[in-house]
Image (cartoon, rainbow, N blue to C red; front, side, top):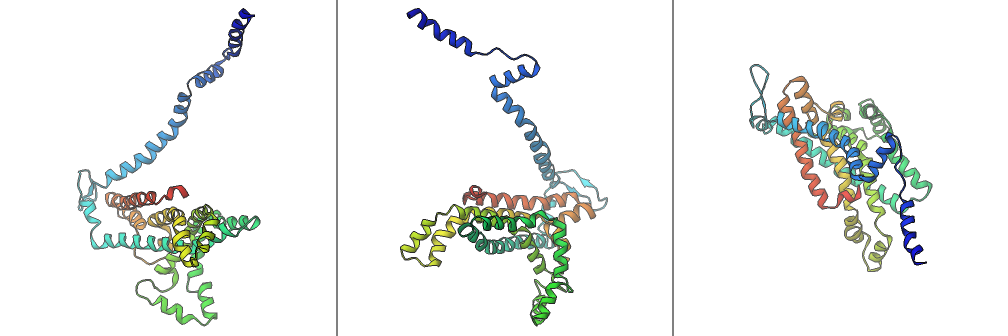
Length: 324
């Protein structure tokens, strides 16, 4: 009995080790099984090379281009290290483009948050079953249509002969629309060639990117917290300020990452709907394409990168990445 007990584990141990599989793929599978880190390395190498060479490499090349300058006489790029191109960003014309873009991005982000919050709150608190499915369908449906089609559709809506002007006329509010268009900062000949029209289209296009993270953050807010605040005598406004809004803030900040960054770099909407005053995206396109000033276009491109790097750092401190 003792000898049998001693030899049995050895037999089981020998039979539990299967022989290696034959063929090239069998041996390769055995190698990957014995060395899982090798398999992980081979799987991650192609995407990391793509990210490192194509994406990060292009950003580095862009950064290097911004430290060159353009020769005023020949129009050729002078490949000598200089900060003169960045100094051009501080000229009144270029600095005005940067400030205009930042202000527009901030206003679009703020308006998107104000519009998105009640929609997201209703979806998180009250929508159930088919109504929640309808909510997601309504939010996602605009994203399925063509970006350019939506912009040109809004151009027709905001035009002087468009449906919006017709609605104001039927409501006998044409005087109100004319008064808005006569404002020196946001007005124009029509809404389709004004800052107000650009603002409206920006909000419409990027609004889903604000609604979804906000709704996800509000889903995590437990209902008993709101009930406890009410039981302790807090008014609805106090509950919103002290309980609901702080807990939903990471989602709002997460949505603002999309709305702010997308507005900051967009050049199609201001080019189709808006005045002749440029935004950063349009300036990059004009300097790189029409003017041929690649260093200045690269310097303009660095501006939103730096702004978003600072913004992402602040958003991370607010826990926004947890709501993405």
